[in-house]
Image 1: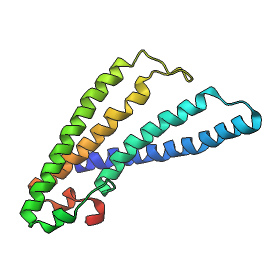
Image 2 (image 1 turned 135 degrees about the vertical axis):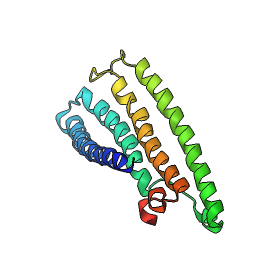
Image 3 (image 1 turned 45 degrees about the vertical axis):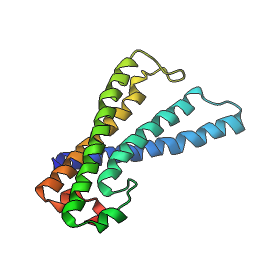
Amino acid sequence: MGQINQRLLQLSGWLVVAGMVVIAVVIPYEVFGRHVLGVMPAWSGELATFTLVWVSMLGAAVGLPRGYQIGMTFFLDQLPRKAGRLVQAFGLLLSMAILSVLVIYGCKQTLANVSQTSAAMGISMAIPYFAVPLGAFLMLLVSIEQVLGLFLGNEKQSLPDEKR
């Protein structure tokens, strides 16, 4: 499972980089068009917004195994090792429940918006909506790997990269 997650997150990382490039090109182009040329392309704002949604969701998945999420470990670090692992497992299981809800309802919302098209670009709204269930699914896979690492005693698998 670790290799599959690693490959998926590596691909997601490249998509995040590509998305950031798109945003870095489109936003200045939009500003230049608005203030210098006096004409703003209709699609640019929509493309930047949809790309930001994708970058945010995929970036969250890429950052999860590296420990980039907000965490308060002071109290966790004060607990005995066994109790700390139980608290950590509880937190991961709670996260997995929330991510499962995001995957299920995100897929329902995506399917509900397949026939709706965006105002400027005319693409199916399922494309931007799909970022939520896909990102949540990737985070769910990482969380499953971390829980398995905790229960199987594989410390390297259960801890973020910074703590290894």
